[in-house]
Length: 66
Image 1 (cartoon, rainbow, N blue to C red):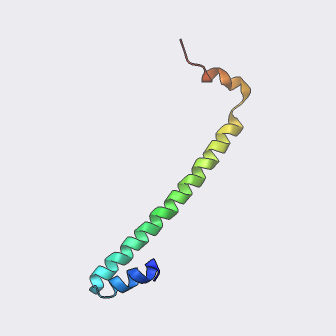
Image 2: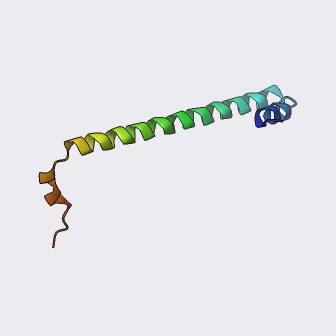
Image 3: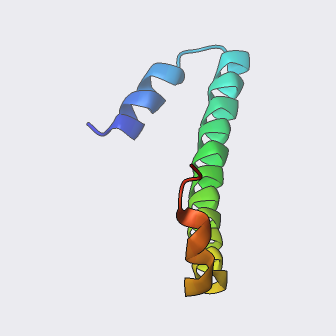
């Protein structure tokens, strides 16, 4: 039995109000997952833009001050 089937079996006996709560939680999890995927893509994009803008002359800023 798959996890989705187990979730269905366990929730079908719940009152409709609790089933709705489970559905809202599933929607929340999906939204959170989609948001995380988007932020990873933006982080990669941001890093690539920074690397494109960084040149060898900027390496003086990488040195620690005395």
